[in-house]
Image 1 (cartoon, rainbow, N blue to C red):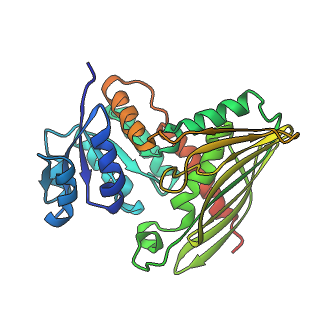
Image 2 (cartoon, one colour; image 1 turned 90 degrees about the vertical axis):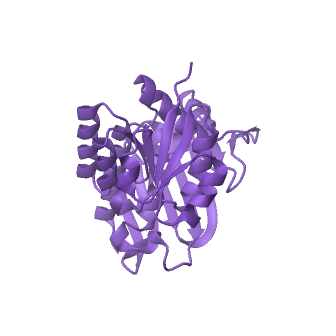
Length: 322
């Protein structure tokens, strides 16, 4: 019998309402049981999704709820570690939006807390739960494109709302923290290697980086990443090898961006296209978290992986030449 994880959500953020709330509700081993918000109107969409939902008027009240096993945190970046620690000290597992912390030292604190308490602490890093990344890792490992030589990764979108928390330096805003976990993190995921940051050029506006170009190496594999909150919406990841290349047209946000697909092209022009339009990476993430919390099974994205990406992001800021 599958053990059910009873979830609470800290705050009524838009992403929690549109994506993670429904993912928790649709997961086989999860129940969306509570949300914390002072505004009943913001709780209404969650209550419509999950009848019987309890609405708490403070975060502390939700943490005191004995009927909650795990908490999802969609708060601004700068608040992540504080509330992760409070959730775990309240005896509950925690899944926190990325980036889970602002520094490597903060992640080390969370690792120590996880090991001390035996409770799950994980970053809500969803792409390793999507089968397209399992396929790409397998193709690379099997030599489907020969020897890997170069990686390109693009992620951009237009952000015009000056009140958006991504543009607030006090809340940990900026494009590198927001989506560098995808461009650099996915290269780490696919190759199993750690990057050396060769150079970085960040575009600053209002105290946050709104664009970033990063050049890195993964051993003898070169890598170029581009991220922006000021250009047309685009996602792409390309893995170039000595015997062909692999192209992903929606590597990070399939469905909402485009259909997930993996295209392998050989030097003689032969193409193999695999479409993966039924996968639900957020639901799979919730289910994997619940299994690990219930059984102690290894989680696909432990804090040690998140720490490695944070090391790379800090190296990007250090390498920025302005």
